[in-house]
Length: 468
Ligand code: AMP
Image 1 (cartoon, rainbow, N blue to C red):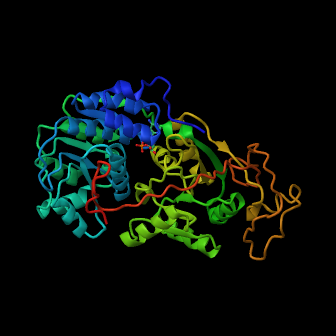
Image 2: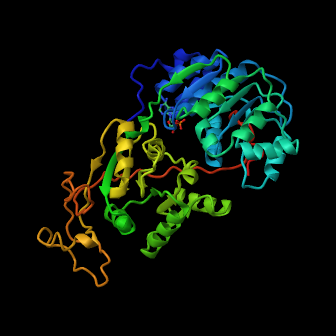
Image 3: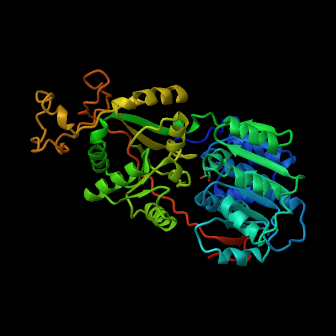
């Protein structure tokens, strides 16, 4: 099992965190800070602004949550209803729920109150929670602005602002909302900006927001890729659906996240898998929030075997130990590949990412390999014969079923040769696949997260507030 790089890290006890936080860290079972934690925690404790290049999976959430809790507790204030002292902005509801869960985990021995706020759910429990004390508010920008418009939240007391996954917030078009929110927050504050990538846009945002920030860069862009076992299957686009259905059955994958490039493609693929009796659903921007939430919940609890998602829709999916990611098509932006496979192989675990690559996508593959500075094994899978290659390989495979009338390919349920030796497809870069290897299937169980809006009193023994 891989784990985060903690080779040169100091102990948590050396970082200057208060004892109740060290107890919570111990309760969480962490022995050593990850690099982002070792570097970011002292900087944030000292009160400075921070610009951090860190991807999900590096332990970044604890990296900002722990010192924030410490600072808030070091300077207790009489709380005012609906007036948070710390605001954490995140791109998606799923991430919001997860970050707030971390705030609760690490703040469990502190009497602070956290609240998570996002759209697409009944706003009434949020109104109710905002009538009470809220020290740390984790919010998506849109719903936060709804509350601002209704004056149900007061941002004038924010001392610490965090922009988490800032690059995704920009990708998702939140820049104007972010600027509106920032205009309502005191200028005199501590600001922490986390981003997996550093585009010009992020740098501009950082320049306008941060004051002489400390910088931390722990996650090389390919960090996630080091934790993830990756393989490529060369498959013509026209046969990818059948091939994927075969792969899922062949490896008995129980929880697979599949990326497609288009919403239409996501729908078509989910339909095909359903027709093959593989429980699947598509999530993308054209689906209602209710449909997305349902699909995600079913995917997390194991009733939905396959979730097909576009890049944007998948942004919020964050399940620890997601065992299997499939790129049905390669993304044309290499960084997106790293984001995608980062859905698996989180800190302390490994995962597997399989890409189905058509000849047309070889250029994208090369770009990705250049970015992650390694080549990805071309793996062949036994038991699947591309329809048009049947004749060409008649002399090579005597276990193949007869080619059905109409020329549609059928999986060969015969041979299960798992030699693992990557075999070059016959023909110049053409996928003629009839292959033989087992890209590392995993059997990690799903971790369940439930997104519940409302506020939570952090201290142990204190009553929970407003959770619904
Ligand atoms: P994050 O990058 O914040 O999404 O964290 C990724 C995962 O790493 C979470 O499941 C955390 O529980 C876990 N984690 C955070 N800090 C540590 C640590 N110091 N040691 C081991 N696991 C950690």
